[in-house]
Structure formats: structure tokens, C-alpha cells
Image (tube, rainbow, N blue to C red; front, side, top):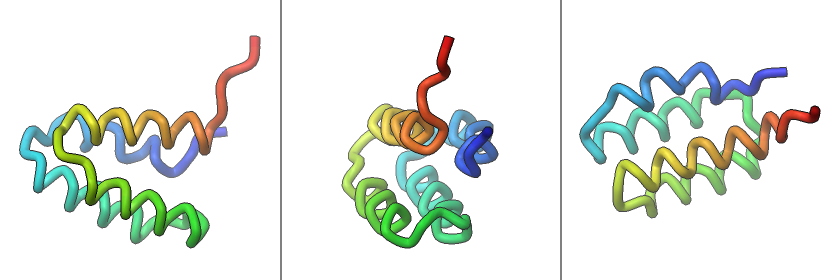
Length: 72
């Protein structure tokens, strides 16, 4: 099962401006079907990120939360 966040990955990796990435990421989350509680927390965390690397980390940690770790 793939989360809705996976659809944002290409955009995430191609935006090199912090503010533009924050805005795009936040807009994507707002328009997604993520549970309201998770959505609020994720948007708050997006706003607190002060670098592109932190946004990438937040994104991939969110993927782990919503998709879970693969089992082998």
C-alpha cells in the first residue's frame, strides 16, 4: 500500500527553494485525504522546518509513519 505522500516525492526532490518547498508541501498536505489530526501536525512541522534537508527528513519520516516499514 502506498500513501498519498508518495505522489509528492518527485516535486519534493525538484524544488530547491526552502519557502517554495514549504508552500508546495503544505498545500499538498492540505488537499490530501490525510486524517485531520495528522494533517494539522504535519503542517505545523512543515512550518518549523528551517532547511530543505529538514523538510526532506520530515517527508520521509512521514512516509514511514503512513506506509510503515517493509517486512521481510
